[in-house]
Image (cartoon, rainbow, N blue to C red; front, side, top):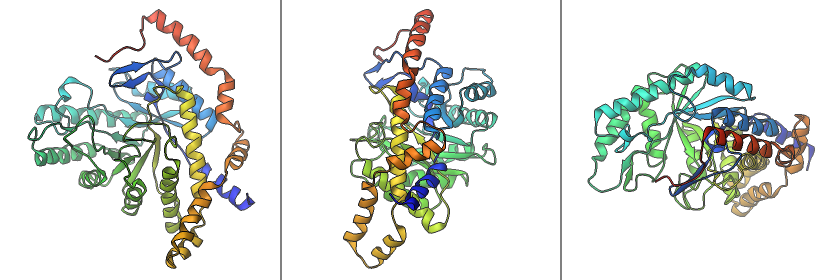
Length: 399
């Protein structure tokens, strides 16, 4: 590889930050059952400790997304949680309100026909925004389970207006530097109509909420064969892409590790981001976050695997010769243009990444170094003993 290409890779990696999710380190499962791992996190401190390991070995994951109700005890000082994160070498990242878990959200949160429930949801979001201010978190990430399962169950236009109203109320409470990320999902758990079902709805809601609201694109939240990179390109051009959740899917929202199914799609998404930077002279302000469910893979290893894969694909996409690509596009040289992308994708960038890590005094192979560290075995032994002492039983059905 040419020295200029290596330098380019080093430069783009230095500014590439990826947030890990606290819930990715705890036991997870499917709707049929929760599957346990001996070394999985028991509490928020464990989650931060595990996230600190990912950051220590990759050098690019300084923040951790947290879920209100899962990571904060009632009445707990948010600043204490922030200190706990810093003690483990990370800081609190995006704040995720929980407006789908409690029983009063059975028929929705912002889209609930009961005004009292809608107000309860708004109050929780406002409280979450306040927690974000206390821990100096920039992002408040909104995902909704709202929708209906049967025709006639709800008035779609009423629900739309309720969402607009509640998002506006939430937006008004943001600090000057906070951003409200509005996520969308085509289905599940709502199967007839989901209140924020696609990027267009999320875009419209964000515009109506206010200038500090942006769209959050989750790669897995799309139907089969949907062109996610086109969505990314449109939102970039509109200045409305606020966040990108990194994962992969075989069908839809499988929450698989990044690049495990279609790494070329991830490359194409990153290509659009690099192209935007080439065209405008600066990279867009995007919150990159991992959002996966490690039911079967060892949790920290899976997280490191995804982060390393993201770095590799981001580096490959940076190597596309965009001046030449523009020339080929103007001449309508379709084969030449496609091959330019494929050549960049086929480039082996692992040595360039290893040299970048060496400069940063990181392990050249983060996954191998982590496995050699023995952290998983030590955590499993300590946490198994702690669970026994606390009377915690892992696994079992959700029913």
